[in-house]
Length: 105
Image 1 (tube, rainbow, N blue to C red):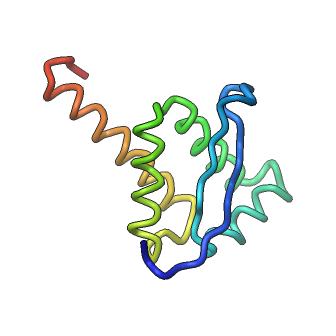
Image 2: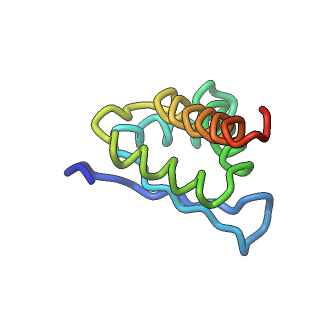
């Protein structure tokens, strides 16, 4: 892991308190997170909701892959847009893996 500072986001998935997700996010994203929370009608909030909506569909392997991508690319993760790109990367890799194993997309 890089020598970056992180903050933790904790959430439940699908309103199931047994299914909790904790993400370590680079501090560079903290201001955008604060803006999203304080102004729920903002573009930042829409992006935050999109990130967690995608994550709610991820299995544990995909969640761990997403976290690893964040940590390994921490110096490049500066915004929700960067996090969304990593979410889409994980989703694409999972689809390609399924396709290459004969499952189709």
